Image 1 (tube, rainbow, N blue to C red):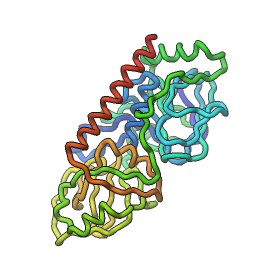
Image 2: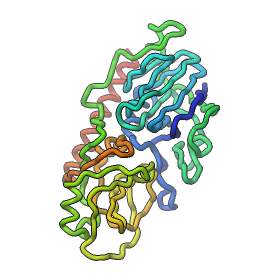
Image 3: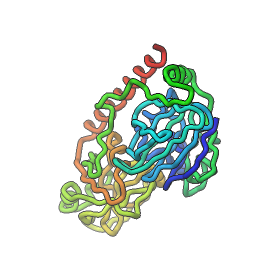
Image 4: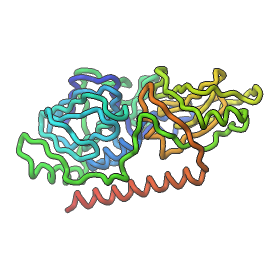
Length: 335
């Protein structure tokens, strides 16, 4: 089975969990900006959480399914519709052969994720199917999807087949069907155009003067148009060091907030480099990365300091929720 791209959207790429294990060679991780949304989308269609899906940014694509398919759209609300009918987010959906998935007005967030049962079966490059745009590797020919692309879908896992049969049973030959089950409210991310993002201290926080540290946690920062998958450039209160310091480049990760000489912070995102030489004032906690990834250009963010222990607790709570969902979906597929 394949899906055909009728319209590509603004920036539609194939992403899986990312390209790990090669950062020591300077190869970036990539992967989804909102990894939570892609994980849940995969679980809803019976895939492994790490299967490849589509990341669609601001303006979604138009896609045709060349065979019956099981799909899920999670993340930001780009007004998806299937054969002209609105598609609910965070649900499992059966699409008959020839169905067309389209996206319209941007209502919330800025990135949506499409998972299809079986996952997108593109070549594995360095243990990942994620698109690394700057290097032109991974995904579909190392680039964003274009009109006319036909992307193969892998073989359906047993749980996907069971879910597909279950949804198809009550639908007519040419009808779509939506799962009667849905996610509980506490599993839905609190996306907002101006979220408060929790951070822990960065490795060089002590190098910043107290006025700058205070400003960082009290000012509102705006996401600048120069932002992309590599980093969010944000502008608000300028930050400066107590005194100039020469730093040796050291490892950085998703959510590292570093401050170059102009005083405007940069939050490193999915396509971040592997090392950085700017002082790091803070690190976004993993539980809040999806919220930050859904802030559009021009959006606003503020930062709140939390302890490492609190950050770890939120990460554990989040993983427990995903585990509960995983078990619940297994039961849905066998009943």
